[in-house]
Each structure stands twice: as structure tokens, then as C-alpha cells.
Amino acid sequence: TKPSRMPVLQPSHVTMCYDGSQGDREFVLACKGRPFSVLTAPKFPTPPSTLVDFNLVGDLKLQMTDLQCAKFRYGGQKLRILGKISTSVQCVLNGAPAGNLYFKATVIQDLYQHFETHSIAGTKLSEKLLGPPFQLFPNNCPTEPNERPNSPKTPKKKKRKLLASPSSTSSPSVAGSPSPS
Image 1: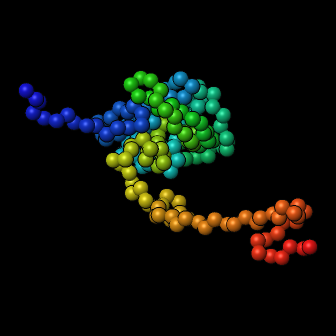
Image 2: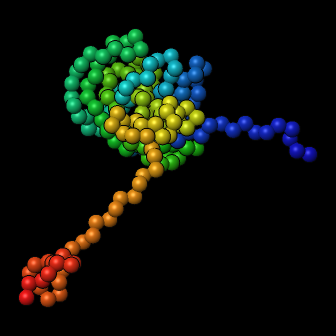
Image 3: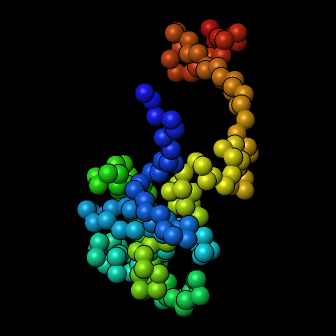
């Protein structure tokens, strides 16, 4: 006999994730063999860029650029922006690395102490992590202000090359023009 109900398919994610009780999700990524969490939570606004804890950046010995110490408010907390990082990280599926992901983030002092997560996904990273069922825009919608929606492109006409006359090697001649004799 066959089972009476069909199996429930869960949305596939690019990396392993843990679902929280309030709709939040923590995705697991790894850098230099060290796993870390990236939070997406509906109770907090999605920051324009990904936020990452300074202590994690130090543990991974990642080089920071755009060094600063600017005040920053997020989720009702007073924080400090210390710089920026960009690196390649590994996605984790079933406990093993499974592909790479470009990770660009703003480094924040004490992010883990305030939010109990190593990183908070920004707009672009949230779209990648949450996957197709949660896309904000259709596939043909422009993502940059100067882009046009995807449409069939018309083929460009090929330019004809000028042909060189075999008798004259110093100057090319155009087909149909008289050659000097």
C-alpha cells in the first residue's frame, strides 16, 4: 500500500539554515574552515549592506578596508562601523562545504553581543540566501537604474573588413576602387 499523503517539500536554500521561532533564519557559511551564522529576521529592518562582527573578522584574519569609527544605529542599538571587508565564503550543506559565495560586509563592533549572531544579511545577500520563493522582483525587472528590462536583443550587423590587394603591400585598397598603376 502507498502512503496517503505526499511528502512536504521544503524550499531549497544555497546553504544550511536554522529556522527561529519568530520567522527569523540563521544561515550557516564558512570562511577558512570556520563556520559562522548570518541572520535574516523580519523583526529587524534589512540593512542596505551586510553587517559582520569585528571579532569574527579578527578571528578569520581578514583585511579591513575603509577604516573608520562612525556611530551607527540599528535595531534600537548604538553601534560603531569600523570598516569593510570582502571575501569568498563557502556555503555549507549537510555539514560539508558546497560551493562559494561572494561576501561583502560592513564591519560592526560588538554585533554578536547585541544580536547573538555573527552577521546580519543585507539586501543583496538576503535575496541570495532566501532564494527564488522569496524574490522581491521578477527576473526581468531591472536591478540598476540605467538597466532596461530583459528583452530579445536584435543582432548587430557585422562590419566588412577592408581587403588588401596582393600586388600592393604598403597600402590597403577598397574593393571596387581603382588601384594605382
